[in-house]
Image (cartoon, rainbow, N blue to C red; front, side, top):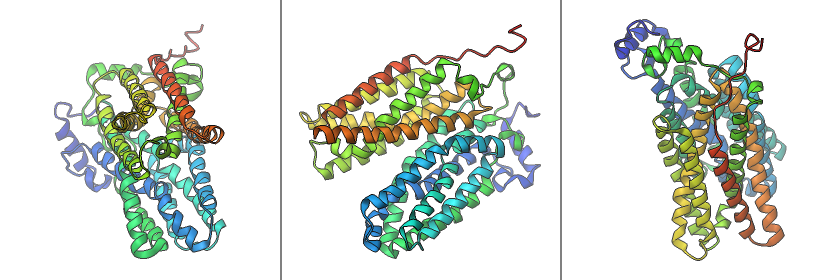
Length: 439
């Protein structure tokens, strides 16, 4: 706890002024340094993650024209890279716990930047595959595992708001970096576009991580949120228990959260690949527009539910998120008879799309503690990527078998109902007994 507990802002200023080597933003600032962490993390996700992950569609046609590759050949590379990002989540979680967020993010930004630069010089298909796989190791290292871990260290009372802000960086990045990449490709060609993205990562993200990222508030002599703990909070923290992943395996809440991840990702995987076709009563242009609007509402969902998580029941919010899933999917079911229902899909599913990945890590931290947080996020990340792939394949197979998405939507509705039921079952894990307590 800080010495000057009565005035945390003054205390922070004095502490930072006495540590000039701790970063330019830490000097004599009246803004809690954690908000600089939030801003930096937002940009890391917006540029560092989105440049490599969301811009793939921009390069599909240029690569086909330049090399004569098929759409399948181009898509395979991205699919392998996306799967690798998910499979590496547990590894990144362990790396964060061992080496710290900053070193992991530095590796990630360097790797993504170099890979993008080299993609601008590739000549053969195997170059494309090798560079995407190389880049995937970097994308995993600048993704949500280190980012959410960092925010969980720096915030307690305002963790939900901070998490909502950084997670909105993913949604904003998906829009901004696709625009940047498409404009660059039109002006400089696809090779120039890749190189520009690489320079943005190396020129902005890498220096930002070096200059701003600090592992924990204690590194600057600060408390979480920039506010000294009350006597009650100090006592609660002293008695708090952090589960290991192995201990969590023995607790029902872990499996409830795991199934919620599966249900959310099955729906998301199906929607990501098939949303345009599912909005079958609309024209292709209209479907594209409304899907884009739904992604826009996902940013609103991240911010609204993240901020609310600091003030109201997180369990209640999770139940609401699944209620939003149900309303959004029901809107799709009846869309053919009532076109205005598309707004139910856009607003409710869009908000749920962004709210779940913002609220979920907050619940993980609250249920299982922060000591092994990165490992938990990594484990759930692996579950998520496998479920995403399953959802996309499942809906595709169902359409191929029946020639219609009607059955597929019904399956997604059942999954949403199961998610709603699971959300009502969320509880607190029982603290494991110590060897002394066991006698």
